[in-house]
Amino acid sequence: MTAPVDRTSNGNRPEGYDKYAHEPFAVTVDLAVLTVRDGSLQVLLVERGQEPYAGHWALPGGFVLPNESAETAARRELAEETGLEDVSELHLEQLRTYSEPDRDPRMRVVTVAFAALLPHPPEPHGGGDAAQARWLPYDTAGPLAFDHDRILADAHERVGAKLEYSCLATSFCPPEFTLGELQQVYETVWGTALDRPNFRRKVLATPGFVEPVPGAARLTGGRGKPAALYRAGEATTLHPPLMRPTPEGRS
Amino acid sequence: MTAPVDRTSNGNRPEGYDKYAHEPFAVTVDLAVLTVRDGSLQVLLVERGQEPYAGHWALPGGFVLPNESAETAARRELAEETGLEDVSELHLEQLRTYSEPDRDPRMRVVTVAFAALLPHPPEPHGGGDAAQARWLPYDTAGPLAFDHDRILADAHERVGAKLEYSCLATSFCPPEFTLGELQQVYETVWGTALDRPNFRRKVLATPGFVEPVPGAARLTGGRGKPAALYRAGEATTLHPPLMRPTPEGRS
DNA sequence: ACCTTTAATGGTCACGATGACCAATAGTCA
DNA sequence: TGACTATTGGTCATCGTGACCATTAAAGGT
Image 1: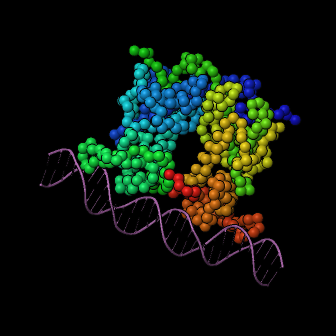
Image 2: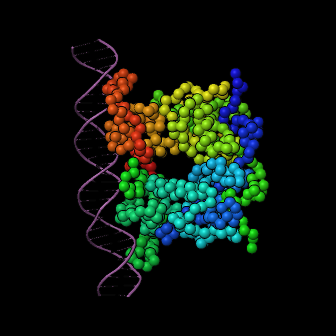
Image 3: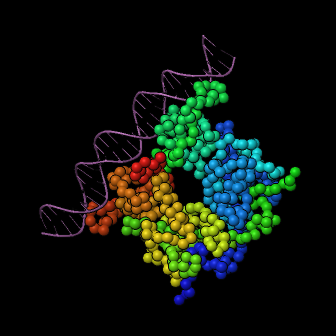
């Protein structure tokens, strides 16, 4: 009876476009750029200069340009905000998309959120322009603009979960690192202490997680026995996983 | 030196909108609706009636309306496509967003992909209009329109992974089910055989995964000892995980 | 009725991974 | 030289799991 209707998402166009989507959507990317420094999880934040949320901190981000994918836009923004020349090796991972109609009071903005992991923060704050960008501890990253608190929390949760079953932790470390540094990544992100010999055994027993740097050893700031240096291996997943200690009962 | 620039994603608006985003984005949702029937993983697909990809199968989907979130749009589409009255209890999960500039040859379409899991397929094909919608086995869901092959593969991978560390499998089952049916969900999605006593032990040893229905038992089609019936429990996560047998070496 | 078939249920046993420890090594600092 | 500190190496009991075998309770055929 009814005329054939194309019910796929790309179907009713261009006719359908006028009917369903004549209010255009702005598409942006938001980045939760995370790093571990001084035993604390830190986030790269920028200070807003305009309303709404003027003076509040927010996640860095920007519009997806007409010929970009969200991934491309995210990596471009990552380079701009951190000031790094080469961000091609950094771990960048799509989190999810936030599309609540009222998430921006001015218009309809759909944002694709990403989590980025990087080692040593290159500079206290990157970027060349005047907008303030700073590394702030995750815990004290007070109320952020828009729904960025939620995005940041989701990023933290995702990264924490992926540490369990992937070799992602090396993305927080410089090219050569000690097992102590690697362990501190886990402890900082999870907020728990780990037994050092057990952590060591687990990491070394997982083929491809890390590989030793032949002759090298680092004097860890001075005190204690020098630690051996390792590089990230080829493996990407952890079987069986390295699970975070259950504080109690997790069903 | 330069004027303060708001570098958050919601910052350069409305001025920035004209500059960066004057080519509007269409935002859609695409659904990978999965079910397990007759020991095979099946997908709900619709046949396209228009170019491009006329005659090809595609994932169901549609535009996000101006006052909807992607999640709301996805659940609305799910109801429309399956023909079910109440889809509020079905598991619906955001996968990721696909935004390659050339993914639709006609215009810029950004799609938020979802995976939906449901028990008994209610009808061979749902929906009330003339567009053809059908359940097809996952394996034979031959080349789909647009990038839907990739979306479907990502959905499969995500669901398979979540079976390991979550109680998601019950979403494929009717309100009351036997442990054999639950096991078949795992075997079908993973494509591997599991040892029945071991599976049983694991499921029953996980508090909150399933809870027995007091007096009931189902004659499983006739043959064999009648199986006890269970309901889904309160738990959502599985600790430790129920890992799929490693076919060989997974680093 | 009887035996066969089928599937659920119940249990054993050995091995691997892990948590909780303790001990030794190799540096710095006072 | 002697604390102190952090890395490194090891033991031991326990838990979870894979690989099995055994039993129970139904249907179906002879």
